[in-house]
Amino acid sequence: MKFIIKLFPEITIKSQSVRLRFIKILTGNIRNVLKNYDETLAVVRHWDHIEVRAKDENQRPAIRDALTRIPGIHHILEVEDVPFTSLHDIFEKTLPLWREALEGKTFCVRVKRRGKHEFTSIEVERYVGGGLNQHIETARVKLTDPDVTVNLEIENDRLLLVKGRYEGIGGFPIGTQEDVLSLISGGFDSGVSSYMLMRRGCRVHYCFFNLGGAAHEIGVRQVAHYLWNRFGSSHRVRFVAINFEPVVGEILEKVDDGQMGVVLKRMMVRAASKVAERYGVQALVTGEALGQVSSQTLTNLRLIDNVSDTLILRPLISHDKEHIIDLAREIGTEDFARTMPEYCGVISKSPTVKAVKAKIEAEEEHFDFSILDKVVEEASNIDIRDIAQQTEAAVVEVETVTGFGANDAILDIRSIDEQEDKPLKVEGVEVVSLPFYKLSTKFGDLDQSKTWLLWCERGVMSRL
Image 1 (cartoon, one colour):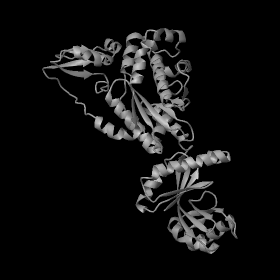
Image 2 (tube, one colour; image 1 turned 60 degrees about the horizontal axis):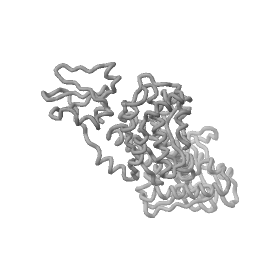
Image 3 (tube, rainbow, N blue to C red; image 1 turned 90 degrees about the vertical axis):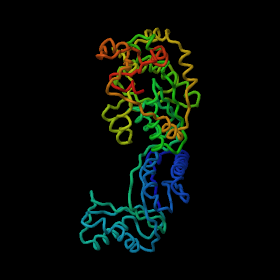
Image 4 (cartoon, rainbow, N blue to C red; image 1 turned 30 degrees about the vertical axis):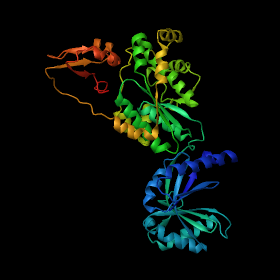
């Protein structure tokens, strides 16, 4: 079997040296992705296309599918490569391949030719098209908007019969641009923004801020691994997880309610910048869109950016939510995002949409920055290739109950504000208040002879 890889058009307009570098990198990426499919597989680069040849016919669908997901490829032609001796020979080799597909359809013939021949491309189109029209009674030539386009490529004395055309994802080959670190939460936005930077030629590493539980991290690991495996497996990348629970606890204890959102984002950027510097990464990537939430106004985004010299890329800045969800559906992350646990432990009752720098900095003076330094220092760094096995081992089913036993007591783990707004009362059952962020340090002070049932309004935080 043989595939002809056509380059993304932006690659073809580069200078000769840059174009050659991009083609060389793309060729290497294709080899890295396909090496496990067929040991005899060969990848050969040319000035305007790349050839992929393989012998194992059983792997044809898998190889074809993998090629459509490699950044830098505009489209793939699945071809049958045969020799020819004359113009009539070209027609005779084309007829049996296309007869069934053209029955009852309108069609046209399009030819691309390389090398020296006694005929022109238009002459081939006319001769082959006329022959097909004569030999297939129900077919009819239509040069504008036909039902079927018969694509032929002629290269010297070889005829490439195009059996199928498949669209790639375009973009630049991964590795042609510098590395970036994506702040991934597992939601719609961060998954799509990560994909967009991979498609633009960046090797995307992942940084996850764990705000208090294993279930969320497991879900985010799965999203990161899916994105890497589907679109970026030509390169090794890191998954960095930072336990941000101590930082969240410090913010909840010491920062004014209205400023919490901006301060939390500033802490995340500070931490991610340290990680990026550690691994020589040039930029951070976030899924922020202008005006989507209170921390994503221009004023607040500027204040968030000010805490670091590291470049922050926001590929979704002008996209609306509906479009982002459509993109997530297209790349396959929608289902992950819809079922991702939502952390609700740091939600301000009245978040500011226009934070004042002096006030934010005054609030941060109360913050113990040694906590931030400590969590960054203790961050875990995982090779993304190992995530699948580690995540599978970490998944633990959480027991839920629908009734109460004699020794049961309820632990309301919502924030203090939520508890004051909607106090929880259950007849015949003791209810104790303990905010989520204090669980790790204060749970031991409770009566350990009781069976404590964790409760929150959405059932997500209690599972974590």
